[in-house]
Length: 220
Ligand code: SF4
Ligand code: SF4
Ligand code: SF4
Image (tube, protein in one colour):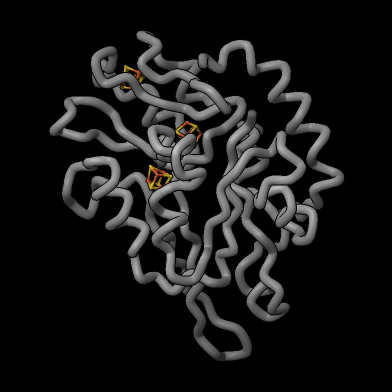
């Protein structure tokens, strides 16, 4: 089992329903700077016309996660499906994980006295098969699922759409798959010129090999 999320980011309308649902479902501390999930906003212009790109984001649950390897107490660790979690009782707030995360996906939850981040809603996966952010999104930006299951919605989607990763060059094997917009203008405006575009057929062997190698440390 190897959990991941595909994001049809062209559909994001920045309504922030996912942020609200995440806080409610997971008891995340209130406050704009206390978020497991967010929408990155980048403004640009093309032929003299301004535009705004929206990149909904959260923890990438990287297969080679630096936040896990730097944690001195194993508070940051993998669980089933390669989900990266933080055990609040073991967190000593040294912030090493926050400094190592290329995606700035972590924050300190003062109510838990611990670093916190997205958990892929692991507490409800088996019951609902989805996450609060996916279930709430009115424009169906997110598709969560198991990369090891050829019949999962995420694999079916990745077989039909090209995608890219944020900061792929850092080499953490991130698991947020950003789907190339079907609208060509939007794709040109929102994907950097040096961004690698992938297909499922090409990337699947790499992700499968990496998951098999690491999965012994993914506790049940
Ligand atoms: S995105 Fe950051 S917090 Fe999430 S697994 Fe990767 S390095 Fe860790
Ligand atoms: S802040 Fe907590 S989770 Fe992060 S590295 Fe330190 S002990 Fe581990
Ligand atoms: S998967 Fe769950 S914990 Fe992660 S951002 Fe979505 S709602 Fe929050």
